[in-house]
Amino acid sequence: MKEQRGAFTSSFGSMMAVVGSAVGLGNIWRFPYLAGVNGGAAFLPLYLFLILAVGLPLILSEFILGRASRRGAVGAFRYLAPKTKWYLVGYMGVTAGFCILGFYSVIAGWSLRFLFDAVLNAHAGQSYEEIAAGFRAFRNSGWQPILLSGVFLGLTAVVILKGVEKGVERWNKILMPLLLGILLVLCVNSFTLDGFREGMAFLFRPDFSKITANTVLDAMGQVFFTLSLGMGVMITYSSYVTKSENMLRSKGIVTLIDTSIAIISGIAIFPAVFTFGISPTQGPDLIFLTLPNVFAKMTGGQYVGILFFLLISIAALTSMVSIFEMMTNYLMEEFQLKRRRAVVWLLCALFFVSSLCALSQVEGSRLMIGKYNVFDFLDMLSSNYLMTIGGLLIVIFAGWRLSPKRFRKTFTSDGRYNNRIYPLFRFVIRFIAPIAVALIFLSKLNLIGG
Ligand code: PFF
Image 1 (cartoon, rainbow, N blue to C red):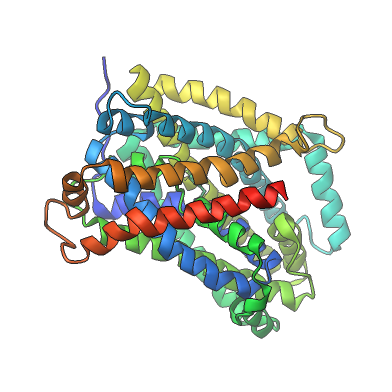
Image 2 (cartoon, rainbow, N blue to C red):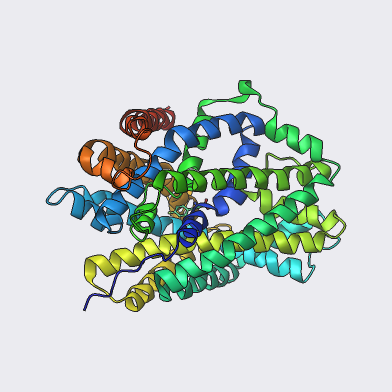
């Protein structure tokens, strides 16, 4: 028998769920390190521009598809374009979900490890080299990262098992305000540091000469990643939202919150980095190696460290919940599986993938695909290709394949809101967003070939 479809019960709850998906490691781990390697302030204006030109139109497109069909990633296309191959876009999303959860859960596991270390004050008095050596030993053990990413996947599964309302909605309603609170405390703490001015200048004083083709690509990949776009997660979540919600308003707020949290994370992180004379251009290790080192030197650093790694763990969990829910919904809709059974299958499969990712990081590991280890390969495949191509196809579908009448009805909630601004968004969704994504994507292919 088919289980009843879940639904969010309040607009606050549905907004927190969407924010929970968007705000994650992408904001607190990926954004600061990308801003760091791309020259700080050079990155920011570009990122903001792409959020408006590509991010907002895309999140709206996914919401239109989810709301118009009341189905998940694959089902939406089957319903809205029956007897066509469009449903393959949904399959691409499910594949991207596997890839992302595989490596994302490993990073989430790292944050748990640093949380334990902070609670035990294990890094007190350690130098940068000592912290780095400890982290290397942790990764090389193989089993420790596997165990911790397994814990994260398990926690995610527990939330999903409870269903859309009692699991996804309820936990996001609790965790998201908590996350905001912690972030604000960390941000205020940052104001008291000596490196505050330098950190701020690094982040906010624009230097357009630093913008290169790679900066543009990184910024666009980040826009997709941070707003959870291009893989049907937002289609699935919007299929749980009541039809009367003002979509433009709520998605505008979500986009604003997500962007603000990325910037606030930068404010919380860079002053600390400058205060202790560490280079902000570290790359992916920025928050995992630099910050424990900063906390080890700071008065009260242990508590700041606990709050920080708690923050990252919460952010990771709610994002993982959204991907897991998209895939659970897919199995339930396509194969009429019960939620429990779908979750168990997914958990086993994902644990396998995440274990491969963790093992591929052991020094000398032969788990490679081409020149990448499995971890980097899945990151590259999903963020650079599956999400971008998926996003491009989704926005084309919404703008060109969906009937204008249905588009309008869904966008304006049957004529209730945004009737005046609607033509502008239709234009952006039909022309600006797809052209921008396609151009940037093509230039990426050139770069790879070159
Ligand atoms: N938006 C999340 C982040 O910024 O960490 C990552 C993510 C979640 C990507 C869900 C994709 C997704 F479907």
